[in-house]
Amino acid sequence: MRVAAFVAGLLAVLVAAPPAVASTAPKYPTSFSLPDGFTPEGIAIDEGRSAYFGSRTTGAIYKADLRTGQGKVINEGPGTPSLGLKVKRNRLFVAGGTAGTARVLDARTGKLLKSYTLATGNSFVNDVVLTRDAAYFTDSTNPVLYRLDLRRWGRLPAEAVTIPLTGDIAYTTGINVNGIEQTPDGKGLLLIQSNTGKLFRADKKTGATKQVDLGTELLTNGDGLLLEGRKLVVVQNFLNTVTWVGLDRRATKGAVDRKVTDPRFDVPTTVAAFRDRLYLPNGRFSTPPTPTTPYTVVAIDRH
Image 1: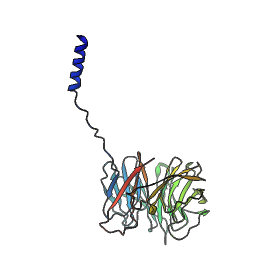
Image 2: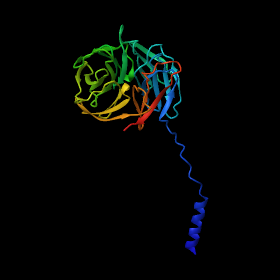
Image 3: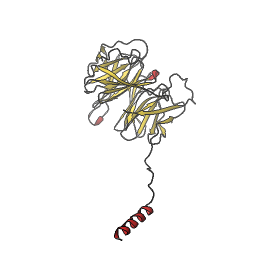
Image 4: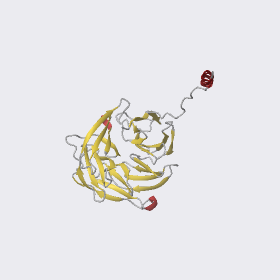
């Protein structure tokens, strides 16, 4: 009798229990659109879930929420390119392309905090990496790096320092040094030379370079770089390929681990990570830009 009563009561509770509620957790889109005609190049993602994109024509900065894919222009740009981007502590560092400049913006409001003239004459300031105490910019036309020394509390310097690149690297026609990252040990810099497909390690202070031994592998059309532990992610733009390179700690040698292509790629340029994904803007370099040309951002698995 008691067992029967217990079972009957349990069945009543189960029948009366409300159905399970489906999860309301946001589903981050695996692709989303940028404004028509935006001509994106760089991407940076902050400590939250905001992604920043720069226009290579107007220099505008677009800020998007990765949870929804929606966003807005937070800076209309100076009318000159915004290429490589990095963000840290609510400050956005912007490589200025043919303008030969670097800009630092408030990442929350888009307000210009400081602008630097890195080069006069022919130049192509292409990408930037942030280290513990400096920002380093590449120049695809001139064999130099530009360094902004970040003072205590991140105070911005009055001017930039130019570091000549020496050693193994040799500039030639076309896009030379493009993407930049730190070495796994944090003591040097990694530089990808797009036109030759070679990878170099550079001394942060002297600019002396040594080619990274990748065997017979070339990373032709290498653009944006992202270091994750001892794996270097290389975006090979016109090849529509993302390549993972395993490196030793000092980045003296490495080997390609894998390559990924995706039908959604349309000349991806740069890369940034968020949670379990890598996000890449499609630069569409092979498509003539117009005010109505559509542009997208795509996400792939991080590992």
